[in-house]
Length: 104
Length: 157
Image 1: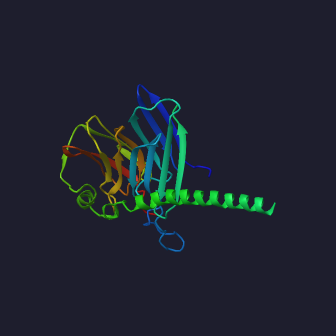
Image 2: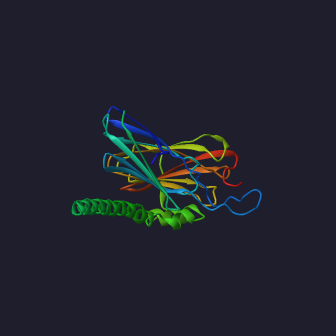
Image 3: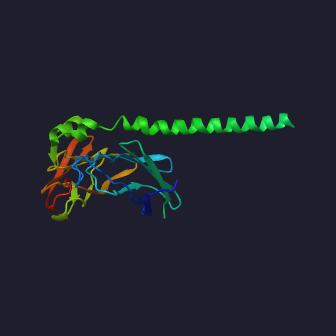
């Protein structure tokens, strides 16, 4: 599956900084369709798991209050060039996506 | 000849079977994980209820050690960059709240063993309000707030 998660991970002085950009509409469920007035169903990422090699570094729990096409950055101790970073999200409708990158 | 083909077919279907099980097991994880999504906390309409549901307490203590970076004025409430950082030790989670939103709890980040107490993301803000960060450490909940003036709200439509 082509991944829509963009990940940049950089290690410097023993600390790895990860920046990621996901592609998701992040609909709160509170908005209404401008023409019909029908509420637009909630559709947002609920959980993001970030792994360094096989170790979970961070789990983020989100509401629809995170902006559309979410940006997430975090840091962790350790990590060397070539190590893998894997980010997986799951949304409230059960869809999921995973992206991987190597630390540079 | 027929027999040989049968063997191959059997082998093929066995292989597919094993793969199916593996995928099934993989798919179970998001389901199990979703069950832990704290729905009550995210649906809570005030900060205290949200914090109680999420962290078991709303007894936060203001701390200078918790730093929030957010703009003084956000022209577009739909995209407000927020960074939370602290030098505190033993931080297990960071929660992010936009106190003026209908459902104030925006996000909660559970930090693993190696994670630094640092997160940066972009959030929606309905109106001018405080962005509140609550950091959970072994000693309790520490918080900081930063007012952000929102010119155009980012939750309606």
